[in-house]
Image 1 (cartoon, rainbow, N blue to C red):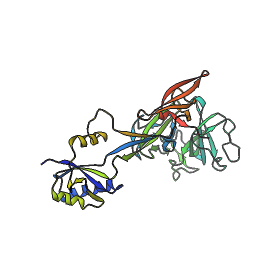
Image 2: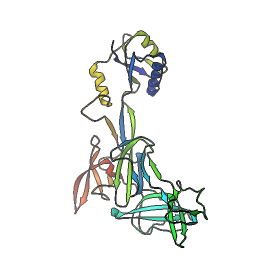
Image 3: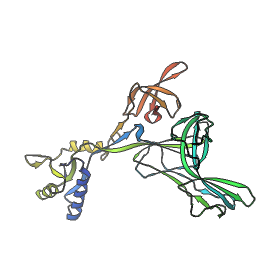
Image 4: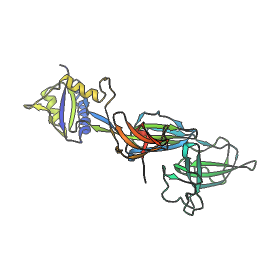
Length: 354
């Protein structure tokens, strides 16, 4: 006898638990010859709403471990900043807490870093993505201010470490606070060349998502667009098995299982074309099209947006059309006194936040 496909009706939300329980039963009872695959049909949902995008900015020296368009899982390593090493032998004469604020200028011609002592405090309201102009205060005492127009691309707690070399010159190191070896490198510590005072800083995915990457001569930016699994058939589990009354009874006794999809009390076998369609949708069988995905976004036709990457970066425009299947939008932008419609990726636009 060969295995056929059947459908279990289970408590909605408990599909994965049922699958785990069946797999445990198969292992304990040696039912491998009776039960094959157990499938919970899911599709991947890409969420382009602003609340589901994480932006990470790093130096041009950071090593990337992902490529544009790659799907990653929560916790996956995306990039790593190099460790910070001592250049010359000397003595640490200062190790103070600062807040590093990086501003990328309009046109992305260059970036500028501002160091604000933690003792004076950073002014409230500063965040990554916020536009600033020359004269914008950065510290609570208004002593430190921005002197360029641009966008904040990084805010980080750091240690400003000053090493006085044997020649009497001071070398300054800006070390991320989370990687600084505070127990080993205090004021007065003698350091040697190539000693690591700050471990390599890692950037990991905060959630499952799809990677978008932008690189300039000065910085690298990783945008992570959130993805999640969505159940195609809530309350159903598909199981490949050889039907016997004993196997049926065993499965129906598993917690959270209601019954088999049946006619007159007898479990119904799925037709080959029915199960093939399901398996193709979720990528379990070869198929000409890509694995099915669902795209979510909170952009609307007629909404004014800003363009954040590509040849029209820093332009604003109005959405004229949305194609979720292609993950594209048509945007009307004003150029040379007339409106031009351009096609952009969803990852290239952002809501205008007041």
